[in-house]
Image (cartoon, rainbow, N blue to C red; front, side, top):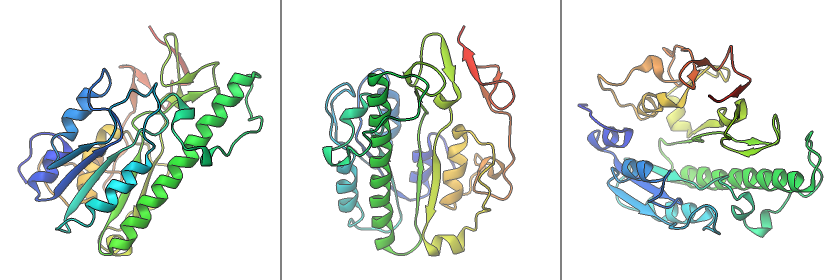
Length: 258
């Protein structure tokens, strides 16, 4: 495959039918660049135009749209679902039926507002787990070779190391803001075609996802390096450098921003 551009452009050139379905608004300080990538898909759909500070549609809308897309013609598809996930305000990210955590959580910061924030965040994570399960159920029903890959674009501090919640703060950043969830589900047919070493402790950075996704889709290009795919036996760990010169694994705990 000759390739120039994003992972979506690569998939397009490999004759996949690509979809970008987003529950985040298409235009904004943090949104516009991602929207440009999403617009590269053969079909792009935006289900939310509100800022995260407002009451937005729940991520169930992505599941509903996915049910429609999988019925469309063709069986060589890659569908990107862009969730709103755990964006602040946490309490606006899940329906009342998922208001599960209400007790006093474990934290060294003993205030009622801290307790409610942690509980709301945990409720979002639980709701996201539900959404992912719904997506996997849909993938299973399709049969054939398929996979579901989930990852977050960033982590968050929620009153764990410092008296703060969110992605960043003016003076301090913590590991929780960088460590993210990432998991892969494979159908039985995909497992047979793509055997993956069960190693959960590999050190990995998501700027290498283009190599990993291409590997899962069996795309071969001179721009794709299998040693940078965490799903490949040729994978090689590399130094994880953040903030330009901080070694995440050896130097980083809580760092003061300059």
